Image 1: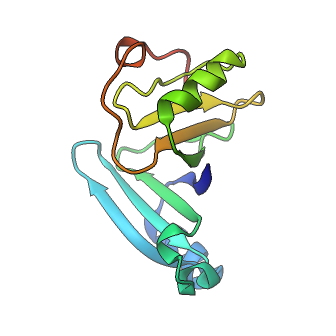
Image 2: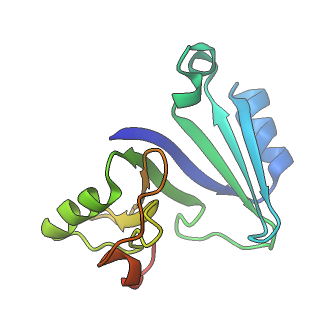
Length: 146
């Protein structure tokens, strides 16, 4: 398992980049504009992480800007922790065997979500290419929120 990023939702891209980049000193590594989903993702790295040979693998801060206004309450602006795993299906099976609810099953062979005992959302991502779709995951419904 490898730590990937922490996601936080932001309401103003310019103000957020001013804080995280100009004031805190993080560096923008990449940006994703998703017209269909109506959101922008901006990935930031700490300067020391950016300079290393492993910069592409450095832990990142993901700023998520939803184009449709939303008021965040109760920590909703904090999104999730993300971890890359070697085998998404084996990881989810191990978690289920341990009594963890798979809130968003890896139907696509790529991504799943679970929650910590304190309700923190955890994203699990398949390392490399998605695994072929397989049961019971392909037909498993979402449970609760993620």
